[in-house]
Amino acid sequence: MIFIKDPNKIYAKVWKVDKKENYTAVNISTSDKQQDGSYKNSSWSCRLVGKAKDVEVAEGDKLIINSAKIENIYDKEAKKCWLNIIVFDAEVEGIKLPEWQDVKEIDDDEELPF
Image (cartoon, rainbow, N blue to C red; front, side, top):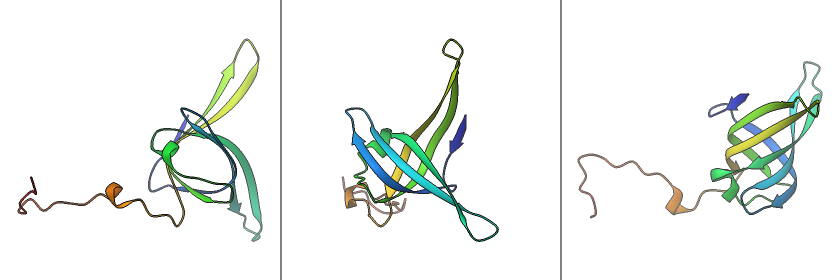
């Protein structure tokens, strides 16, 4: 199992989006620049859950993955492996959160509004 958390963000291109009741299934691709200047591309299927499930993502968007878990599960009876990528926190590049989701620090000396 591998965990990805800030500041180790992953940048991906979204190719397919399938909204479900409890999660959003997405197909994404990532790329890694090689020493010769070329790029090595990878394709992934993953599930957006938690905060990531509420992200309005569409085909063609650039997705920034802030928090995720990658696990490779082996089923002894079926003699097969399954790679699961579960994204907990993500954002679409260039889209700002609504004001009500912005976190604002409060100075201890300031008087609270309530």
